[in-house]
Structure formats: C-alpha cells, structure tokens
Image (cartoon, rainbow, N blue to C red; front, side, top):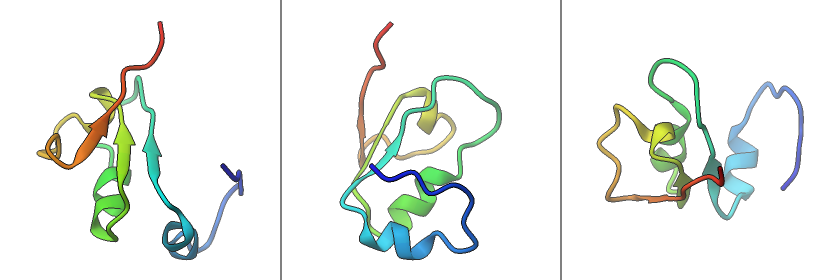
Length: 67
C-alpha cells in the first residue's frame, strides 16, 4: 500500500495497482470508487456497505470487516 495524499490524476496509480480496495463501513451516497476501479479492469475487494446501490456483487470480492 502507498499513501499519496491528494492527486491531480489518479489514473497512473490505478494502472500501476494490482488490486483495488474499498473498505467502507459508513458514509452516504453511492460510492463511485468501485465503478472507477471496475472500469479500468482492477480486481476489487470491498465491503457490502461499500458496494451498496451498485449491481456489482458478482464482480467484487466481498470482505467482512472485523468488529
């Protein structure tokens, strides 16, 4: 994992990644990170909360957070 801070362009980082993570457990609205990850072909791991409102259960690996 590499923490970068704010970026003007995330695409080079997405293209260099092996997997995308979306460990969301709370928040509001539809999480647009997941469609971005899937649009460029990144294997994606997320929580059920992180994919709420998106028909992507068949292509996202779900992980249950501890606690």
